[in-house]
Length: 397
Figure: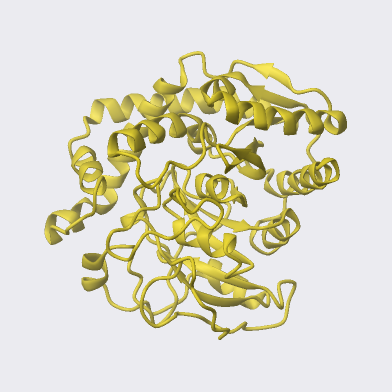
């Protein structure tokens, strides 16, 4: 295994868990890291918490998604840190250490796939696997200046991965260039359409939700893309408001989280870091009627969005309304950022749609990303669009 110095604090402490390629293939010569909720045979999947590690044995088999990458010629160089039980968006982990954001060292890296994003941003791996339930690939990618993909829900198996909220969980991956992001998709994704016909649809609620400096940076990039892909058409997609969408998403997610992990939490009574314990207490107390209302709203969102995108249209919006919070931010501020962020990430999350984020600039001296969402099953076409968009933006830089 290639040995690398972990200057970003991205990898799980202890002996490095890696794996040589299993065959030659399209990713030969590439290195990757794996979020520590995917199994690698012979290693304990810690899920970011010492009590989880203590109560679980080493994995017997390697997760199929990891196996596919090894068979494609890539080398695994280690397992990366995650927020405890993948339930958080800042990237903080008090037990293993919070990874450093290589692009903004005074700010959080984003979670829960914090270590994977930090590893790629620091050049410790060519790409990395993460998972995304409420934004855990898209947000760290935006915060760390990376390309990132949340694929169509269910398009890629999550066998051999720890669950959080199964109807929302997806794998995902990070890369420093759009071409590699697409090449990974060629290995992992099922067949699908190769092109998106457009038009671009600007989600007005998401743009209004963004801080003015973030919106201005992203608008400049969007204006360049409009010269190639046509004008972006304004669209009011969420008349109920992003706060309503966030609340419905939060309730559905919380009910599933407790259904998935509540037995273990009750039996083990684990010690959690700041914020994580509060989220599990809230999940346990979730009113089933509120979660049911969230599922009804989710079906309405799907009925609204999927026909809109079926012909090849693409939503465009800020990935996050703000850059990564400062490491000195209060819990109250972090929660405010979380609510504003998940009102946007819930659009693709609730609808099971693929979303790709591109690093297009900075605000407050920190990276910010521009997101594109396509219809479910259009992942390959979306990645091809992202590569073309990245090429266009690079030419205008």
